[in-house]
Image 1 (cartoon, rainbow, N blue to C red):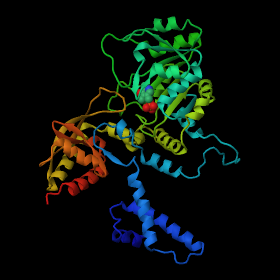
Image 2 (tube, rainbow, N blue to C red; image 1 turned 120 degrees about the horizontal axis):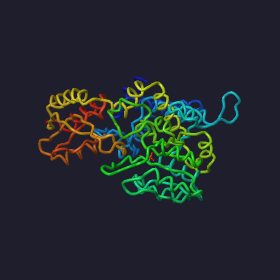
Image 3 (tube, helix red, strand yellow; image 1 turned 90 degrees about the vertical axis):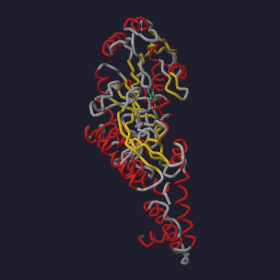
Image 4 (cartoon, rainbow, N blue to C red; image 1 turned 60 degrees about the vertical axis):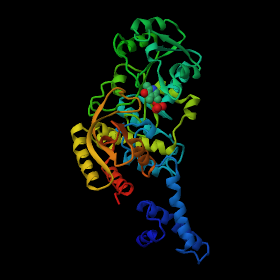
Length: 452
Ligand SMILES: *Cc1c(COP(=O)(O)O)cnc(C)c1O
């Protein structure tokens, strides 16, 4: 293999990562072995072999979803694919892309439950009786509204009739689920008595609360305490569902994101069902995760929509690995899940990394120079929308190109690097750049902007 890898250079394939070359050579070697096994003794390391290696290598960079470096300082950048998976989640998903223990029981050889492990982990991590994963959190709202509310009524506070983006608006989701929406309170205030009034109607099947996520209300506002609302719902025998959005499983360590409520706390406050995203503050693959009372979760599971919204086996594996990291405890989760790790970094830690990075850029003697700047990052994906994450970055200036053009050059280059504009400079925020990525960026800058 080492000889083949060295020979890659002679065939102009050394522009690809060594690991990719190794995989491609292995696949082409398999072709040769198969050809020999079926009697073609001419097959060997010839032109056809190298052509196949090249074809394997060319597919990867052509895939639209190719790697970019998120230097924006927005941790969960929706346009850059939200949460970056942990190594563990990546490996689990890659391993699950072949034949896997999906819906089978090894002991009996009979049918097993596809998402059994994820359901157990969700229950364990949140203290809920049961859990259920579906395609995304938008889907959980649709599913809950349909499974509990179809042909009946769903009560929502007017202040929580949010639009998430991509034409996803609560009133329309509830209507699409076949439920009638009853909105209570006013734009800025909803009181317990408003809900009490609505719950007099026996047609009400569910009370839905929605975390504001992507906006904040300030001033003369009011909403009922969750435990009071829960007591009221119990009195009427109507389930209380909270669409939480972000899905925080651990308390602290998240740089004080006061607006985000831990899942467990909301269950303890009396919510019967809580749902959240897999790729926001949970830091894993896209998924919608529902936890709560066993009979309600069973009712959701038996709804036809659950089958329509089910997760791919690789995603389930990635979700499971992510949940297992959370199960190891807050410290492990924060150190190994990129989103949590980036959020937990203090401005001072980032500053020292940024100083080193700026020095390295300037030491290259290229036509781009760099200076240390203070900047503000964001959580992203609609979590804690007005919270600034104080950070430091490298502000880049090119000898002749203006900032817009400089940013474009680095965006279209491979690997694509996305920074932020600040004071007519391109800023790379060190919060969202790993050590390896710093090295890659340095390499790229050296190649693109050498003074010679
Ligand atoms: C983000 C969010 C959603 C949508 O979740 P996806 O996982 O993006 O589908 C729904 N509700 C709330 C409150 C959210 O914050």
